[in-house]
Image 1 (spheres, rainbow, N blue to C red):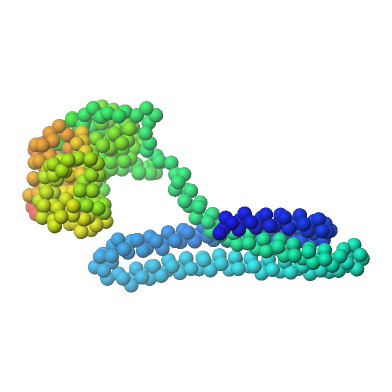
Image 2 (tube, rainbow, N blue to C red; image 1 turned 135 degrees about the vertical axis):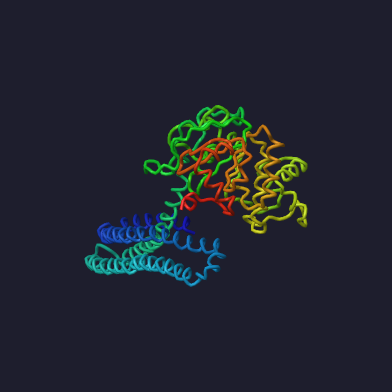
Length: 454
């Protein structure tokens, strides 16, 4: 509809103006002057409304954020009896949005009275001067009637165009936000001549410094210098917020280093094709995500086309076969969005199986066995050690038992390497590791360094 009006109205406007000029050029000057005044008034109204509509969409963000938070965290809201508080927060966000819309509509409501005032003022002026021309004999009554018809066509076209302008004002505000997303350039891209093969699973951190906000002065990782041989099992442990997840995210190039370099297979990760690198460095993230579909559909994220035996073998390694076989439809069992119908431990095991199907050179488990019991955790670690010995395995954990059998253990403290050695040597030489060990062997749970220090 808008496209039809936007095409038809200007054509009618131009043709009617030409006919008015042909009938009587002097009288036409009156409505031409009126058009200029009207266009200036509409432009002023639209410019102010545009600014308000820009704020409106930002307020929509606040409203949507409030709704999204409450839906995703509905159990927490109920558990802490915060329904009234969240309702009030939502009401405030909705009220702010309502007030902005009212302000914008008030401005746009001026559009019609301003237009009608100018239109009827123009008609009165044309009637006055037209009557004088008729009396003087320089114009006929028929010409004046035709002129009125064309003038009304001109102004009706303008009214249609003003409606289009209102819609364009709102659309422009939306379009600007959409364009910002579409035109956003990715910081991490493939090099001009990317490498398409990862030689092995060796990993080297050469004097790495990393900050999420470059130039802020806040370094998440500082002075990291590590060398991991292909096939090694590396444990990473440390207090909350010490940079464990940030460290492993640099390996698969989810982020780029601020300074220094990270190498996989002897090559800087920035030299690899991203798809090649991420296929060969499989990551099981801290937050386990499953997608709506069957169990088999989720496993295919690791390998699109594979035999049933391959999928079963991967699930067996991850100890996921234990519960899949008890599902009513087995591997064809339905997974709700986000894996809502599976427990935390089941989701973790499916995510590990999905990563194993990639047959990667390096496998990173970012605290991905925290929701499984210690017996299952031990089975998974034993399977990873014996079945895929050539794959480099990096295990982030809060439990000493999950990493103590690793070839070497990395202890992080405030983004720096505090120790990197075997379990036995760290117990002798590293104070932080000793504190973690003592806290857990004395019945403590997950370790937070600041709490342990207190």
